[in-house]
Length: 480
Ligand code: GLU
Image 1 (cartoon, rainbow, N blue to C red):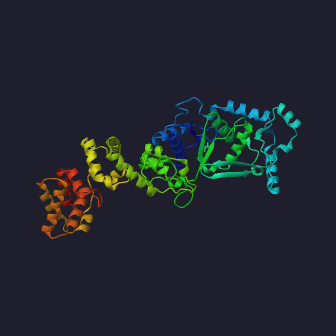
Image 2 (cartoon, rainbow, N blue to C red):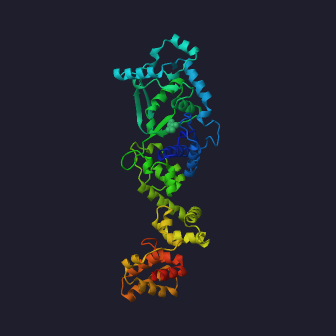
Image 3 (cartoon, rainbow, N blue to C red):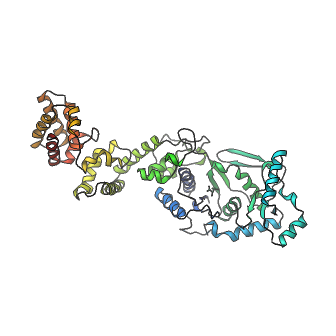
């Protein structure tokens, strides 16, 4: 049974890299009909941020990543918060100490610093255990002296593992510190808690960011100390921004919520993120739904190159997903509902007709090919909800004769079949009759009716606005 886990620390909002880690764990598990476990690694109380766990869960939910076991869903391997599992870590570390695979280290901070400095100078590994004899240790221990517990890492030999993505990873033991497993206040370190839990929760595959490649050697040593077989490891390459640097809060390219607020659809972001590092060998397909991703995903097709996050590409994926949703019977209802919310929030008060599902449908039909994100309709299509505000100066730039053109156009449109193609051909007639270029007339009409130089197809725009509104705006503009 494949069991993967996503193990965030609740220290803030979910960022794009973590979304990718969660997603790959989910896709891999689901592809193999396995389970995804959400485990909250909250042993460092000082770094925990209130509500972060709730935010993480809701962002995962938004993305369509639903863990099979988690603090809120529960499950047979709980509790799923590390802060509720201290007794387990304690029990495990004691066993290692009893077997002399780990030891209590009574060195003070200063002594540790001194040893580390000396080791740096000689290029040798720090030997924390040299400070005290076994008898001294027993004595200090019985007096309850403050200490940490360290793993006894062999001095010689190597520690190796096979990473699904990075291949064979080998580390000389001489370079691996006797890592702290338990802090002096009884809290486990990440290494201990992580390994104990992956074992206790029966995790088959550990899929996580490449920043843990080195630590994994420590984990492998810990598995050996316990006498356990390690899970399979797959580390995912770091995400970079277009400049080749790390993603940063400042560029608003880090947090999933930033993308969400910008109007990126969850299906588009998930599709985009799936392709950060994963390139399916057997297909050229780029647009995937979550189900298709589950069906196609394989860890073997994840490569080692660090992928670049590119806002332009996200826009492209969103455009495709928006169209796809809009064209599907189920998706279209939810797109229109979202649009209703946006319009209501932005242009209130508006009449019920202007936020009716039917009207919003017509408007979106006009704009769908011109937008990447749903909120773009608010800018590009503002004329559908508010009166345009163009100035005489703007009209004059198009034509000094603008008043006459508007008047003639209004006359023609007053009694005609008010459908897109007809309206446009009548406006072309106006141009011909007046001896001006069609594009001048059309540009002027667009400006007068929408207040903008760009937008959806003009004929459709006018048709959806309706004769009454169009004529009212043409008259108003002619008076300026
Ligand atoms: N809590 C670690 C983190 O926040 C988990 C790393 C792992 O997946 O082992 O990244």
